View 1 (cartoon, one colour):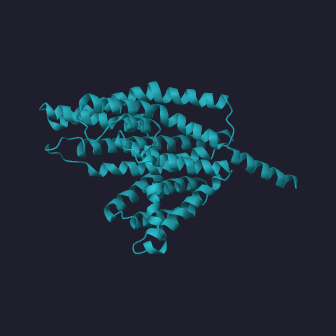
View 2 (cartoon, rainbow, N blue to C red):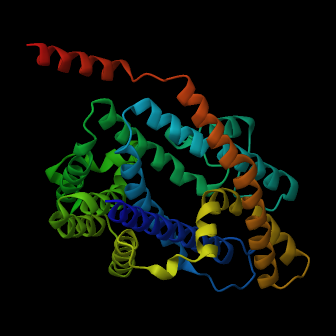
View 3 (cartoon, rainbow, N blue to C red):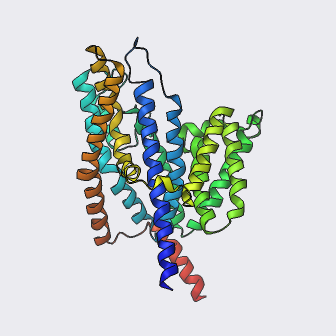
Length: 360
């Protein structure tokens, strides 16, 4: 009995390593996109890697997979949210300070207007909800993630995490019917919802990731149906055929990695990139822009500024990952476990209701 168990554990570890490597490659794609498209100063000729922006799409799909996997092992919505807080916020706060410093010191990132109010709003990670600009434009994805976590927490609160894949697929289906070309008038006002709940624009990506995980355990026959639904939703929301083909390809890559088929991803350097990917994503933009623009301002070749920015961003990401992100996550998780956080009042009400039913 021990050998099959060890084999399953080994397969699971391989899948997680491949997903980590994918996350690292997605972060690198976004970095290259920003450094080649937005970092060069006006008037400096550059060949931009525009397809790197699809690294964010892969991030969202991986998040759907990993978060459902994590939530399925949780018994408490508050523990889940505390774990997400411990994972995201400490590194984010350090990246926010570095982003502010890069703007103030260099003066070469004018597209990032700063004020005390803007910085304070950014501390919460909820600035998008208040229509406050991001100090670092990469931060926009974090609010989307928070909204997704909230949806996951709600299903945990009512002890119905198994409903999440179906609920997400149902919303994507309804959204597809509502936004498909020439269908706007069927659901008056629906087009306004993403203004207040921007997760809706990207829900198809999280939904696909969630269903890739679901297919690993049950209902595998539904995955092709959900995948087609997600692509129809993207098309209905205005995604053109070329980006749609890239997104579909990334979906296939995610499925292959989740199945453990991409053995070449189990390279220690790629896995290491996955380890620092969150911090790299957070710190690279303003810091990198300042370095690239300072270098070109002083007559350096553009490529040298880009490579220097990449090197510095990786080094900073390493420091943030191992001195802030990982230690803070470990300490906060232990603190949360020791204080035995209880569920929301609503969860308690649900448990009492279920207890009464058992008694009756």
